[in-house]
Image (cartoon, rainbow, N blue to C red):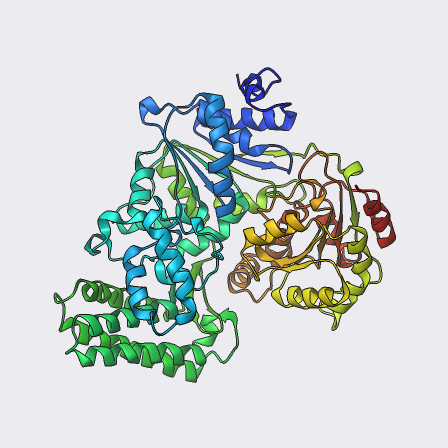
Length: 640
């Protein structure tokens, strides 16, 4: 039945002109179908071009019986894929499978407008921050007409706009049923719709947030399902670690201080001591941040908390929280907002004590600093047991898929992290003809990563290649520092448009890249994955170096230390597999369709000079290789 669905005379062919099923796609669909019928778990690496989205959607919808109350949950690693899946792929498959149930899209609460916080924010900032007036007016006008409250609907508002945290809610500042706007809450409406739907499209963060809420015993965000599908599953272990851990940040503390001050100014104007306590909390949080004595970065809280100066700030913050609790206790019952703040004072105080009990084994205690804020974190080193407990609670099928799950053909690194050692595993190669469609270059004579002046050397060596490509190039970096240096140097040396991540939203940059048709996009982080630019608009992908995560990154460092204690090799068991998977994601940006052609350049001679380089090379698609940039120029000049 599944094979016929993907045949030239099947349901998809009736809806998609010139559709033809791919062998790997059918194989994956049959494996998913079997896993759903057996209620077992399946891990599938489906390389770019396999058509994995249709391969898991078709059997999952064909097996879903809404008359029995069955539900399907599909979780993605990014909001971009979540929206593409819900708006583009799912409607087509619903039609092809004749599934008539209800489907819905559900995001985390920070994606939805909070009308209560918007109204409060407009009162607080009308005169203090006139530069935000335009954004506020735009959002206020949109809020009157929106049916969903999804911030993504607001035109020309960057994803990282500073105003967004002030007009959306968090678990910490949400008033719940006590909120005056509860009946009109967009988050509540979206969650209620999800509870009643048959097919729910979420993201990984929301899935784990739901587990965290269920653990408290105070409800749930998504319903139980019969089938769970995780696309971009390579992201799951790190996201799971975040949610199975705990965090206390200066943002939480300063937001708490602002709420208490707001109550003083609007409801309890006689309670001057309360305003004083709130100001003490704000000041103590600021001083705590300054005590880290760094611009930004992260490190071991176990080590840092031993400093005498830091111990003084720990004591001070503890005393301020005790004083704040005493002051607020005297006024309980006089304000709903204040009563809610009292609960948070208790919560933060208990968490602060746990974060300072740094001797519990099996956890990483770490801190992270941005320019203005800090966070203290406790994160489990392994989530395998916890995740398996969740899987076993539900009589369901579990499907995990991504284009990058294996390392040199083995799934051990991924399955051990999530405790999926008994899962069936399937690896499906791309149908693309990389031998004809691509060229892989590791240039000669480039300095090793970390060499002073490397950015200038890269610009000198690669400018001719980018010109030959007529722009149409992604330059993917492993750090913001290198990204900014390269962008500045390329802007000085090229006449082509040079786009830089961070100057606009991700989608706006992609739209501009495609519109120009001859641009160079210099990016990091989010552009390594989840970006689909087809055709010759993207003909060259350059990667600055092997994407090793810093061994000082706290969670990675703790995992490496744990591997060493267990007699393993921290570099080969932890750091290396993660870098292989990340590199495969970056490489996957180049060839996205059967007609695509392009050049991949990795500017890291360690791929050929170090023994571990073979692990990377043998994990990548079989592309023709060269060390001569002139051959890359020749290849690119032949592309239309």
